[in-house]
Amino acid sequence: MDFGKQNNLNVVSLKNEERTNACNAIILKEEDGKLFFLLGLRAKHKSGGGQWGLVGGTQCKQETMEETIVRELKEEIGIEVELEDVKWNNFFQCIATENVHFDHHGFVITKWKGEPRNLEEDKCDMIKWFSKEELPLDNFFVSKGNLINFLNNKSYDEKTNFNYKK
Image (tube, rainbow, N blue to C red; front, side):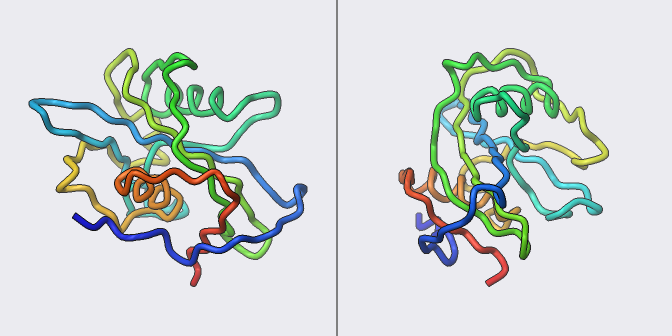
């Protein structure tokens, strides 16, 4: 199955002071030999509203990106993840608007404690497990990069730009 490609990839140079660090995680579970992905339906008033996306957020001062995703998973869906269970998947630069640039880090999580539940109903209408075959790939642009790289068994560590406006 062809899962497509990230759109408009090219190398860019951005000034550090214009960047925000952000991350998301592909949360996977296996049942009866099938792989399932957890996605959240973004609230309509949010950026990417009405689209499915991965759980994630922006980095706070003094946090590593791994610490950021562990915090975000606990805050947003109530699961606890150990730092050693955070697996890196990819990195890309994202230009969201003229002056909003993100260094985006993608992770994969396969081990956690607790049952995922929607704890931020003001930001997310619902969370849902999708099989690989049901996975909506027309989703929130920062989730798309992480998902497509994972599904195509590719990881990127070079600084690439994913400009969703083109």
